[in-house]
Image (cartoon, rainbow, N blue to C red; front, side, top):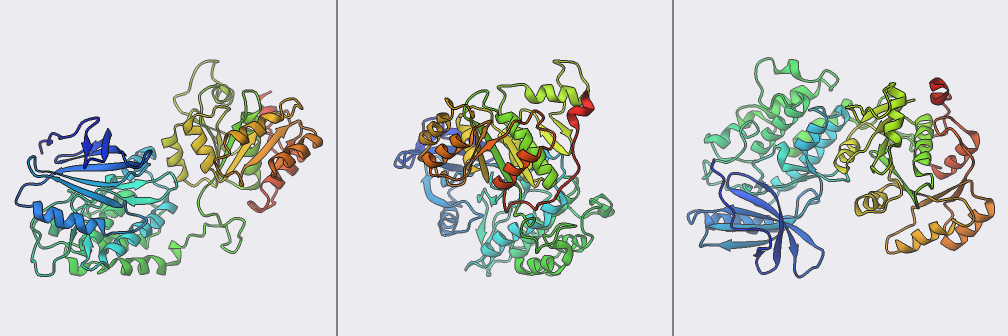
Length: 497
């Protein structure tokens, strides 16, 4: 399909309110732009430009009004609609969703999605499909595929691109326009009948098969069972198979029916093997993020991040330590030691392991989003001492923001200065660590900050090794978060000597 040229460019204004900032994506007949709101400074929107001929303009207008009426946390809000009859262009203004598509997320895993993520993902999609299908009249999405699902930094799935969604019309035998993506669209979308809720369920089955075969298959063909990953619950296969039946009457008839089927089997329960669902300290709702930010260069942020990571690995499991800055080469030097390579010889892999902790060298924010979807219980972000927007955002959204400042008497006030400079942000969950600080310095800072999560860290020459005094401080810092179990001592540095 020839790509339709856009009517918009940088600086163009849509509806006398939305100024185009940049292009987000484009397809055969549409373009999506980021726009800034001239009436609400700082607010950003996504503007989708599509071409609609005169014969379907009325239909497009009706569907836009329908989309604006929708309200669900897994749908972007459609807030405005504009027409440009002379060019045939129509514009939908909707929420700008920060994140990456499921397709990009899969590429980050080379087609491999952690098996424990697949059924919860399906339930999220079914939740929004159930909402759409139970509207009056029902709304049929018609283009469920990896590029139309956005994964936010908070690991929420959002359906995007409502360019071909439509209301179900009971009096019609088939759709007026045949739209959908080959490989994910139901057979009736190619002219065999009108699409209904069961068409979206077919697409869900195609999407699940795509995930379960590492991106190899989205249609049920002879022998496809052999490509479904072996560690997945076998009960998932008949569910996918039924979703992908050629005739709608042979499929599940509603999203609620599929939800009931998935929840019926014990294999689909969220509890992980070896972990009791009654153990509140271990029943995590996803990955916990610890962000370590140094007040200034040399304050010990990286040293503390390493110590925290190995402490968590001894208490829990599945810990990743992420270097989210590039101002130092600490992780690169450490990787050289671990892998026995020459000084300055960089490895092609940015991941290496030390005593059960996965180190990720010079990692981007997009990579962090992918890691959040993995099996890690904790991700520790080493943010260094910079306070640029990206690192500050990661610090503020972390479950456990940890500020590291010098314990020297003449430097303790640096932490108070940082807190004052960021006083517009909530600070109730912040934690503060001062290496080598005196008890008096800690007491004064607690009083000045009116905050009891201020700790002195004792001298600790080897952050990879267990130290009883350091563990006592970290036990207090992470009290109630992880169980008090003890594992064997680690001797990374001793093995390297």
